[in-house]
Image (cartoon, rainbow, N blue to C red; front, side):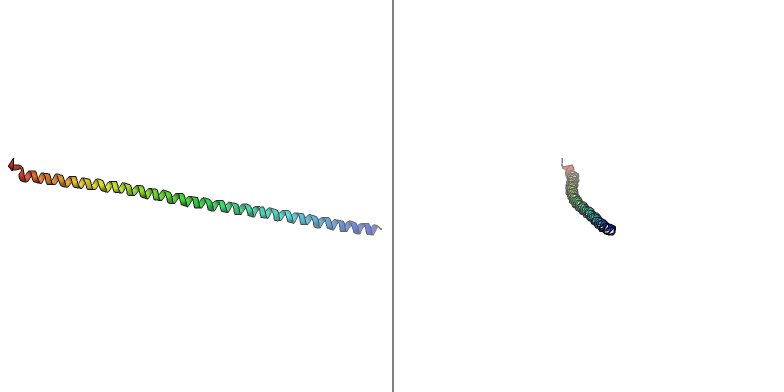
Amino acid sequence: ADHEVQRRHNVELVKMQEESSLRKEQARRATEEQMQAQQLQTEKEKAEIERETIRVKAMAEAEARAHEAKLTEGQNRRLLVERINGEREKWIAALNTTFGHIE
């Protein structure tokens, strides 16, 4: 009788140990899955930030090129006007020199 009680006690103890081990394994898997999900979410957010950074950088570069082109256009126009005015002054001076004695 004592032997049977001890045997049942051992069977119950083994069963409890197996259940405990199973619960621990399930908890470990759940924790691992949660960590993987968090890592995946972090990677998605990082990729989104990188895409947004690239988009903003491209827009800023395009705006800078447009601004530079506008400045260059304005500068070229100014240089052309200065050159035309210089040429005009030169021709007026030449005409005045040439025809100055007529007055």
